[in-house]
Amino acid sequence: MSNPKTKFSVLMSIYYKETPEFFNKAMQSIWDNQTLKPDEIILVKDGPLTAKLDEVISIWQEKIPNILKVIALKSNLGLGDALNIGLKECSFNLVARMDTDDISMPDRFKKQIEIFKEKDIDICSSWAREFDGDETNIVSYKKVPKFHKNIIKFSKSRNPLNHPATMYKKEVVKNAGGYKKMLWFEDYYLWARMIINGAKFYNIQEPLVDMRAGFSQLKRRKGLKYALYELRFQKELLEIGFINIFEFIRNVTIRFIVRILPKNMVKCIYKLLRK
Image 1 (spheres, helix red, strand yellow):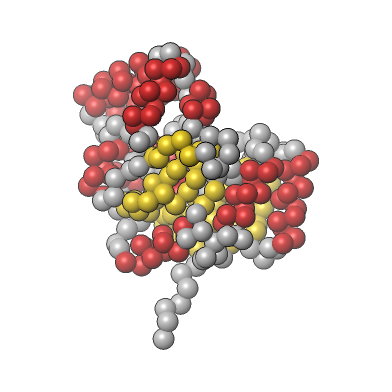
Image 2 (image 1 turned 60 degrees about the horizontal axis):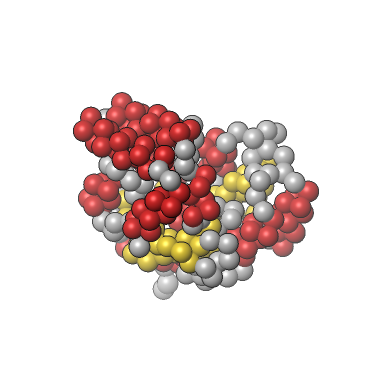
């Protein structure tokens, strides 16, 4: 007798700056093109959207009315708060994160569910491919360590998971305090608290998500303002005991320099890190 299907939710948040075409492609990738389809999709509208975005959402509500659940927030609260609200609405303990402008590979959910069945873990992510403009224009790979102990070591200096490729146990995320306000670092901050709480991590060693990133995204994460947000985040990691003072000084020094370097030099560093 075959094992019963492991049910899971997909959690997404969308706001007014998203592109309708990108969102539609993201939905196609997690529903139309998936070999193992989710049992529900929780979509949080983080504040009022454009008419075109609402139109695409309505089309999908008509297409999969028993799968897609839309939660409309009156105002834009930010990614962390929106995801916390959506997480509460997820019916199943296994929750897959997905960004509304990325593309999941057809076997993504199937491979992640298999890992959860095989291994004693609480969260599973994977490598990701980054594309710039057209999804066929792959510019880099975001590779992350496979095993828990290597993930812990990696996490002391860099984000150890690709957030849009994660699948996790809802109860473990809630026990770590859920998503908290930490602009641009909500996911990394959550992983740090989950590690402190003893959660078990695993990364599949192949890309399961194509992320809309590349150098155009990198431009937004430059400059003094971003460096100061990064300093705030590193201070928080130090205060909660996730990193020590030496790791703090190293991280802040390296990251501050990178954020204020000329664009061409940052591109070179970016290529080295994303081979």
